[in-house]
Amino acid sequence: MFADLLRGLLAPAPARLPEPDARLALAALLVRIARSDGLYAAEEVERIETTVARRHGLSPFEAARLRSDAETLESEAPDTVRFTRALKAAVPLEDRAALVQAMWAVALADGSRDAEEDQQIRLLVNLLGLTDVESAQARARAMQE
Image 1: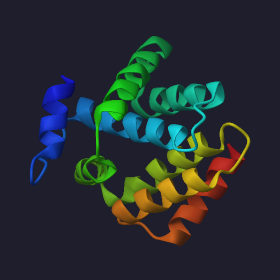
Image 2: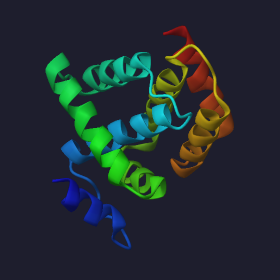
Image 3: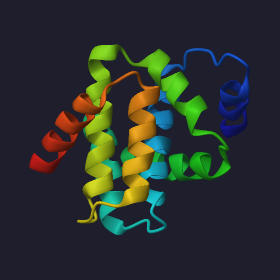
């Protein structure tokens, strides 16, 4: 499963991901954000599972499995750009701000704002075709959660 997804992501023009793969790509990006500061905190793991469960209507068990699969994929995937390209193709523009809000929620889950996480999100926001203003609005919503 991971080999097929990685092969698709590494292709010159990745095809639109089917829904399960889009879920996995989002979860892998959330894991990448959480790990970007060198500390993968339990609060971040919990936030990833809560976010994917709520966004995709998953049970806690299904969300934990998706997060576990995403951890594996994230550790094997060399390139964040390919994830965002595939996710951008799978998620309509009007829904991408919610993705950024989820990213901020994970980054802020451990109670601190880290420069590496900020930098990772800034890159992802740009790659998803959103603005810094939209990111700031998404961060404010995430802080209110």
